[in-house]
Length: 158
Length: 448
Image (cartoon, rainbow over all chains, first blue to last red; front, side, top):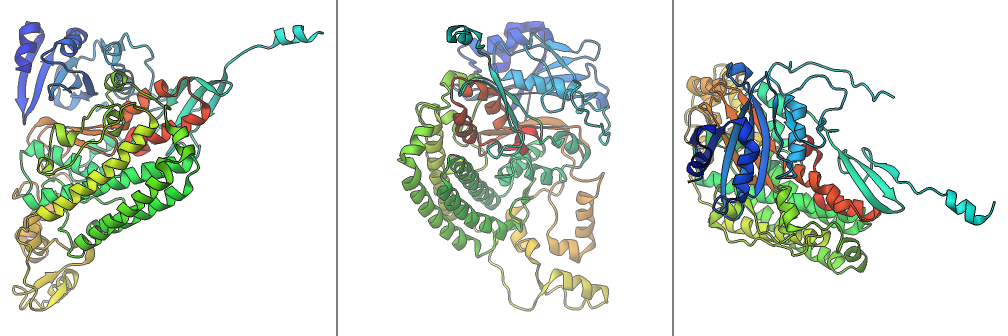
């Protein structure tokens, strides 16, 4: 029902919908993410009021295009259902709309994705690193970042 | 210069104060950059990441089974729940179901973990407000529970007990009486702590109407667990999206009304009682499986059996009942089959097969050796369990090989920390400690 509603509303911008082990997944165009989030949150039947999780996956080793997926996990308290939204982000244009204006918790989640994957969120008020330090070079959860690479901890420059 | 002129020269400005990263009340390491106007908090900026150990990156480098010890170190106050969340995510990838007895064991262990989590949280935050007695009492109760956990898992903290497909070993026979005693003791301690804290003027004044968060804000920030329930929303993963066998137990979800620190304290106190109810029901209903073992005949430790076999003394081994050393007890077939799923692709063989015949040994090595290991089918799943602080989610992506392609943890205290400035602003500096204590921030889980 959820996936059908999303497909009905966004037509060709929804690339794929499927269910795996009971998890509902919709793969969408990254340009509609904010609009879709607004719709999912405000539609009375869907009523996804909690952004449970926001993360990304780097598909470099699978040589897939687009390289990254930004993954949203939504939960509806009133309807007690969940959905996963995935939006592909390619290396050429590493940006996607920020959801901070819809769910304030996206602030920190998006900072973490920027920190770990280097994906920029358009409209984010304060996009800076969260787990790593500011002087850190590279984005550690990318598949091409070596696991055992070490970086000196450089203090802030005065 | 007149006094009037002098007073005109006084400039008001905000004082910046670094609270942490090394501050006794900042459990673990975290930095709160406070902007103070006198004692009032005007702004609060939270810097995390001091305990970042690259859990998610490390998980991508190792096999599925090697991730389990890392999960112990996420929320190190309730490691069993982390084990359970991760194992259930991997099981979901396989589409397998653990045995009945195993499910009950998992429920018992994760509820014990939840109690010790709440005991630590309340004890530590009471101590920071000066109530040292309550802290010691609660640590005493936690000690009884830890002894029980140690009895089963062989470790107090880094337990690695719950695994995909089952648990490491069955419960030892002395476990149930010990836990029944521990529960009685914990009830006593909770009663004492209620008497010490709940109506204590100082304690109540420090907590009531402090660190208030509204329902709407809590939902917008994705807050779950006792923190959300204190605002009056009865969301609990165990009730709303029941996993394992939680739908078979009677228990209530305590909710608060104002969403202040005091309500969070009361919620946690009541949740411990409800967890104890679940443990008692689980002990009553736990199915036997094939537990009754005939222990006639000689018992020798498995290690000794291997030693004898090396010297060629293998006569009569077939008839022997193997009594394994403490950390592996419950790993024999009679116990093992009742706590492990019937899934050859994922579950280690019983220890007597591993030590006793070539097929068992090969299967064991295939599962343990690096580059082989368990290989779930390609796909991705999200599995949520109710952790000590709220919804603990594991998002596991598999590409069909022996290593997880991506393991993402949704740490329950991450959204709470994101919302913390809301609760601190406008309050007093001294209330930062009280509010932060009620978050029950666990560095290992927050920074991963």
